[in-house]
Length: 497
Ligand code: NAD
Image (spheres, rainbow, N blue to C red):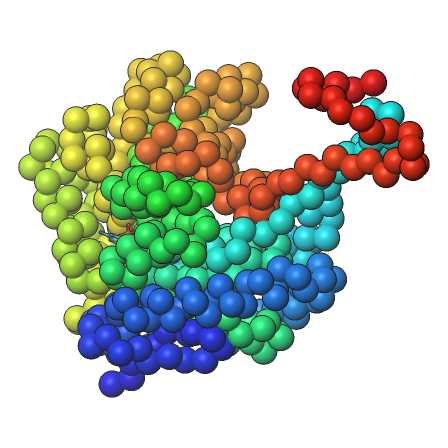
C-alpha cells in the first residue's frame, strides 16, 4: 500500500508522524493508498522551508516569476488529462467533469500570467511642491491554503497561481480524502522551474489545519470548505493576527418564473443539480417553481433523470459515486428524512443500478417535490444528488425565500422577462447570480465568493480581489530637494502647498 507524502523543500517528505488516513476509490469502495497526516514536526518543517524560500522569491524579478507561471500553464495544459484521471480515481467525479475543473483552475493560472500589469502601482507627481507619491504592492510572505475534497485541483488553483506570481510562498493543506492532485501539481511546479520551498504541500487533518492557523510565520489563510469549519478557521486565524478569507457552504436556489422556457430550465436543473453528484458548492439544490410551473417542471426534471447513467467516472458515465461511504450514507439519510417529513419523493436514488463495483458509494439522482422551508432537505446543505422543489405563488415569495436562507453563495433565475431578471439581480442577497445560467461561476478575472454564511471575511477568491488579498499596499511620499531649498523646524502637522 503506497503512502501519499507531504511535499516539503522540493521533495516528497514521508513525515515522522505515525498518523495516516485511508484514501479510497469511490467507484470501487477499495482503499487505494494511505495519506500521511502531519504532526508538529512536519508543520514546522513545511513553514520553515516556505519562509526561507519566500524572501528570495519576493526579490526575484516580476518577469522571472511570470515566466515560471507561464511554464506551469503550458505543462498543465499539455498534461491535464493526467490530473483529471487522478481526480476521478480519488474523488469519483466523471472524467469530463474532472477535466472541466482543471480547465477552470487553469484560467486562474492564465490570469496570474498577467501579474506584471496587476501589480502596477499608482504615481502622482508634484502632490505638493517638489513632492511625489507612488504606491506599490508587496507579497505577504508565507500564505496558507486549506482546501475541500470536492475540487482538489480547481480550488487550490483559485489561490496559488496569484499568490505565487505575486511573490509569496504557499503552503497548501489539501483535503485528506483526495490528496494526490496536490502532489502532482507540486511536481509540475518544480518542472516549471519554481524554486524549492515556494510551493509546499502539507497533508493531514485538523492537526495540520490548526498548525497553520496558529503559526506566527503564516501571514494569511485562504480556506474553502463547510460553513462550521469556515467560521472556526476565520475566528481562530483572525485571533492569531492573520488575513483570512474563508469560503463556506451553500444552498443554491434556482427560481423558475412562469414565462421561462421550461425545457431549458429542466435541463439546467438536472445538469446543475446532479453534475458531480451534487458535490459542488455551486450545485443547484433547490428549484423554486413560481406560479403554475411546478407540475410541468417536476415532470420534465424526472423524465431527464431517467436518462442519466450512473457509474464509475472513468467509464464515460454521466454521474459518479459520492466521495466516501460515510458521506453516501449521510446523504441517503436525508432522503429517508425528506420522505418522513412529508415531501413527495418523485425520484428515489437509494436503489440505483450503477455501472460499477457493488461496493462503490452509489446514490442515484433523487427528486423531492412539495418541499417546505422547515424540512431538513431544505434547511441543510446535503451536498449530494438530491434536488428539492419548493413551490412559490409569486416572484416576491420566491425572492423572499432565497433571501431568508442563511447561505448566499450562488443563485439563478430562469425567465424571458428582462425586467424581472434585472430586479432579481439587484434585490437578491447572494454573491453570484445567474440569469438563465444555472452555475454562474465567475471567470478568473472576476472574483468568486458568496455572501452571508457562505463567506467569512470580505475578500473573494481570484480576480483583482485575489491580487489584493495576496499583497499588502504601501504608499511612498518622496522629496528630492535642491540643496538649501527646504529645511528648518516645523512641528505642526505637515500641510501641502
Ligand atoms: P470540510 O469543511 O469538511 O473540509 C475542508 C477542509 O477543512 C479540509 O481540508 C479538512 O481537512 C479541513 N477540516 C475538516 N474538519 C476540520 C476541523 N474540525 N478543524 C480544522 N480543519 C478541518 O469540507 P469538505 O467536506 O471537504 O468540502 C465540502 C464543503 O465545502 C461543502 O460545504 C461545500 O459547500 C464547501 N465548498 C465551498 C466552496 C465555496 O466556494 N464557497 C467551494 C467548494 C466547497
